[in-house]
Amino acid sequence: SAVFRYSCLAGMVDGWKLEAGIGSESDVQKMMIGTSQISKLRRNLKIRDDVNNESRLIAACRRMKQQGCKIIGVDFMQQLANNGKSPYEKISRTAEVIKGLAKELNIPIIAISSLNRGIAKENKKPTMQDLNGSGDIEYHANKIILLHCEDRESSIRDVEVNVAKNKDGGCGRFNLTMFAPQFRFENAAKIPQDLG
Image (tube, rainbow, N blue to C red; front, side, top):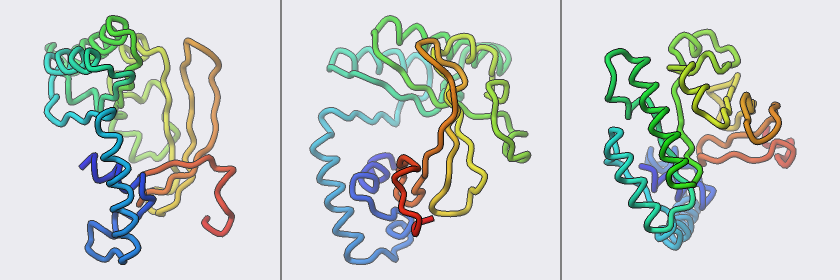
C-alpha cells in the first residue's frame, strides 16, 4: 500500500525484505520509526485509493483543496480515463480535466502517465511521443518529466531524469540514484561509491 511505501521511505528500510518476512529486528525498528513519522504527517498527507474516474477526481480534489491541500498527485491518469469513444479521446479528456482542476484550484497537480507498450521492450530512452496519448498530454502539461533506467534488476539503480517540457523554465537532463527497496531517490552525487 502507499502508506507502507511511505513508511519504508521515512524509515529508510528495505520494504522487499519486510514483505517477504525476512526483515531483521533492526529493519522492524526502522519501519516503526518510519510509521511514526508518517503518522505525524497524516493530517497533511491524504491518500485516496477510491478515486477511479474523472468525476471522483474532481470531487476529491475540490474537497482536499477546501481542507488546505497544497499539491495533488494522480497515479496514474490512464486509469481515470472514462469519457470518450477511443483511448485517445479518453486520455485527451482526462488531461483536459487535470489541467482545468490545476487552474481552478490554483495548485500543482502531478499526473503520472504510462508509456506506450513498445517502449519497455525496446528499453530506449522515452520521449514525449512515447507517452500513452502523448499529443494531448503534451498539449495540456506545463511540465513533462521522463524517467529512464537501463538496469531494472538492481536494488540500487541510476535513473536519468529528463525535463522534456517546462513552460516555466529550462529543460535538461540529470541523474538520480534510486534505492528501490526503500522506494526513494537520492542525488547521485551524494551516493557513496561502495554502495554502487
